Image (cartoon, rainbow, N blue to C red; front, side, top):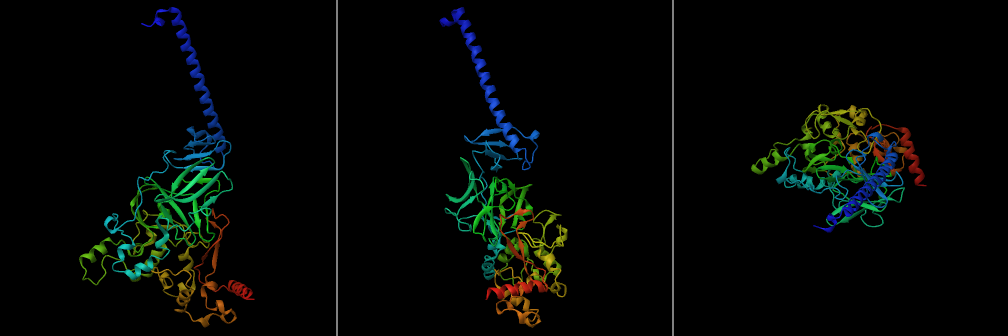
Length: 480
């Protein structure tokens, strides 16, 4: 036995020491709790603003200090961490991760789909067509349809990955994004004050005509990144619809987004859980001809067959069914009547999509409502024309003025243009400039473009004398 146990005086002192220790511990806990409560209260006040989607009374209080200046609160926005400097509400960073330490999980890395690893719907991708259709395949690879989505690699990203042109700067120096390669991948490195995180750039969406925006995987969930590359400005800017000082990496990618950028992907759970290995990136041959698996298997087994089996030839479909193929993505905004990716060439599109604004006159970045506008044209009303009267989906035609002029002259004579004798030689043969005037876009259905203006050809083909005179005057002035 220790001598301390034999002394009643010592026992009294021991009990007193224990009591004092308990008071000190309780005081420390209370003080720490007060600090945490004060931090929560300050954050709640800052987040109780129009930008917050949850009332202060319902906001949870899971707050952690990330650095000496940056704090994070869990689930202020559903399923996300919101990070900001302790002393101001903006800028802020929104991350949909379980753990701030781990960042997004790459446990499901998206890859190219091959004929040997096709999805259950029978979509194989354009490369499965190459052996028998080499010319069509090689031309198609250059089209915007094919390039409208792909697995992100350094050589496919159009924006610079080298300093200083790889920076997205915001109106607050505490928030910036740097795009750069890292090992075998490309990342958006987001810096908030003295804290940073790497978000992978896994998938490119957009052909690059207007822009490229980027998606990333967090396990099987697909999200959009904060920074996009805009070709016209040759700059990295915030993605359409994002606020300058809200670096939101939590925008979920739904099937409504993917159906017009991807040939097929299997959704495992709404709103943004997908089987990445099922994806056929880009809009491939099969969105117009139907899934190719049965077709490929049949002709491999029957090489002597000269008749194409188990495949759709769109030009053999009735006019409206041909138009429906293009109308999947060129008829303005819509709601689904049936699951995404269930339409097949030859189906009636009205059974699958409910078009929200069939007479919509304006334009957007995704579509200028080409089909509805075309239907108003005398050319369309007085003929059997379809989209392929002017467009060959197998080749890249953008900027080929001679091709589109010839498309007009297949039905019209140059002498039919009453203003042609008055026009400068440089535009006298450019039918599209006068008869399909470009629509200027600076607001994408509420998604501002950081001061940029985009243009898309209006598919309402018409005689617009006022616009033609404007083109004439501009051209004449430029030649003086």
